[in-house]
Length: 418
Image (tube, rainbow, N blue to C red; front, side, top):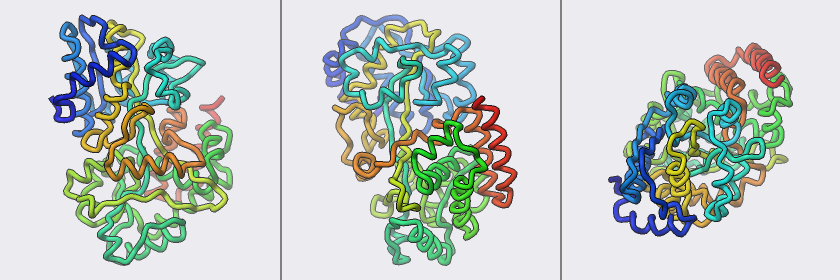
């Protein structure tokens, strides 16, 4: 059993009994869970959850299948259609829509009426479509710029608060023979993070969401201003070369080895950075800097979720598992610095004293007045997100193609949002 969960079964069982009585049920049969928590730290968490829940219910056979996270994005529809499992991982907000509309996720509004769910009220909206709830959140996390503090100190740099300071820092880093940022855009979504931040910092949260909702043309001059700001970095050689050949994990060594000074990424990457050999004395974090002083900062804080497929066979056990993973003690355990390294969604859970989690909690609580984004490929409809991220990656490699890219994205917008 994962070290995260050793010795906690009794405490978690008691907590779950108090939190709605799920643990007091006599559960039996098979509970089939398919999870995309395939990276080492999340995998350990998921294996620990399955083992713990199984130990709490000795008459229940918990079957856990873990699939590659990127592969799951293309496999999930088939998995939900034929011989569906009882519980699956997915994402909140717009990313649920295709599976809700296709009748592949179960309406679990009754579960949200359980008193134990009151402490998740702040996330209920992200789980709601058509007036009903279709899953539960188990974690969320900040994005921001993770950087090599020792390299900054070597070069006499401080954390930038404005875009001009970011550009000035970057020039010093480039002049030292390093890239400012590592990135792996092989799977496209990482480029979406850069667009989210530059667009929301340039034009504001409301404009960004209007674009996501299909209310703004991609050829709009305000969108072009976003790409002009982004191009400033591209033209000065800010990013590692050939990033389109790397996954986000494969791009980590550039930062670990000191060939790049920073990474715009979610806090889930901290565990991999530490595993790569970076110490907390070498690694630090800052909020993406201000571009337009008239714009309040909006932040990417994606929410990850569990859902019950409409074809689930053991619905009783599936709902009990969802109550279990959202209970305060479990939330505290799985989101700790030695586990997911993220933030609990249950308001009664404890926030880890890990320095990066604390910085993220402070930022999202007190300095994200512009709004909270779910991330490019979650806020935009699936087809728009797919074509959009292809265009974003292409722009990073061939910025002169911008006009063609924007026309292609605008054609897609007109088709998708009919």
